Amino acid sequence: MQGCNRSQKIAICTVGLPARGKTYISRKLNRYFNWLGYKSRVFINGNYRREICGTECNSQFFDPHNEEAQKARSDCAKMALQDLIQFLKNGGDVGILDGTNITRERRLQIESDLKQSFNGIQTLWIESICNDSKVIQNNIRLTKINNPDYCNVNSDEATIDFLNRIKMYEQIYETITDDENLSYIKTMNVGADIIVHQVYGFLLSKIVSFIMNLHTYPRPIYLSRHGESQYNVDDRVGGDSDLSELGEMYADKLADFFFKEFPTKEMKNEIIFFTSTMRRAIHTSDVVANKLEIQPLQLKTLDEINVGICDGMTYTEIAQKFPSDFQERKINKLGYRYPRGESYLDLISRIEPVIFEIERSRQPVMIIAHQAILRCLYAYFHQNEIPEVPTLDIPLHCVIKLTPAAYFCDEKRVLINPQTGEISIKEEYVQEFVRSKSKQKSFIDL
Ligand code: F6P
Image 1 (tube, rainbow, N blue to C red):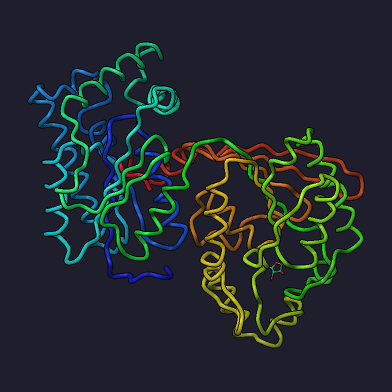
Image 2: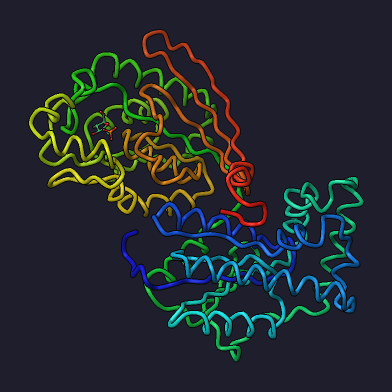
């Protein structure tokens, strides 16, 4: 973890009516923290309720006058909080409590329990307010009617019941007010307006900026390595070699691919196009840019991993000249830093601003860069475990098209034969929550 004091515990608690994107925000933050190397976990009140009270609770269960149900729900919320506290005590850095927390009384109780458990814990409240009925309906459609609460009813019944459930919550909803003395962010209508109150410090300020840039517009993100370079041919690392003959052919075929992918002038002009400042990436990008008549933005941030004293060597030469370094990297490829160079962990912090840029963009994004850099970017969108990053498969002459949605990231790999232009497509569909469920106890979301 870089840029923060590890002993500082952080709790993030959501506030808001159902279907206001709280789970979406929680998952996004969780993914961001884990990717940065923090130990972060989401505790979803609703999952505790489903586990303990069952999945067949209709809207009556959420009636604030239903004392028995209220007590059961409050017990579940307490369990979620206790598990969050335990997680932080056992070495966790960031605990995210994903619940409605819509009464002032509940919030004050949570704040006090957290303060009693940890000296100097930073608690940030994130309230999501939305009065755009289209967004709410869409949230219900995307996330609620397919969830386990409604496995035995049809989608119309599920929607009606869910809207009734929201009405139950509305009866007791108290928005956060300044006199509660909480650090909070209020985001209204998916970030159209944001209020920030008493939010201080490096990490919490970054969260504000992260939340400001969140949106759920589905747009593709295209990742491609540059075409094969001279150094790729020789199996050398580092350097700033230009494309090989085959690499030049790939650049042409890649340009053809994108030309077809964005058939109109308007579509081409929408593309946000990033590349690095290295010759092989610039050369590939220029061919694409000329064909599409667009301009790439060259970012130093996207330059390949700096291999320090190993620059220009083959892996065999590194093993011969620096056997202990070679061994060390083999054992810990993630944390190993080339002498006077970088590690994968360094890369992750280097490219963090690019993640913000991509998250912010509501238009298609195209990135032509390098193997190690693309591994880090890809891992963010696919929520790979951090130790997996240095071995992710990012081959040459392949376009990876990612389309992030609320709870999953769609992936299509387009393998392009640089000589013939022949294309083969590999479709993959990785649902984040399916992946995390298979790894986790059912009511904790990693
Ligand atoms: O070999 C191509 C390359 O982009 C090198 O420039 C870079 O050092 C390397 O890949 C990164 O991959 P790995 O971390 O697996 O050595």
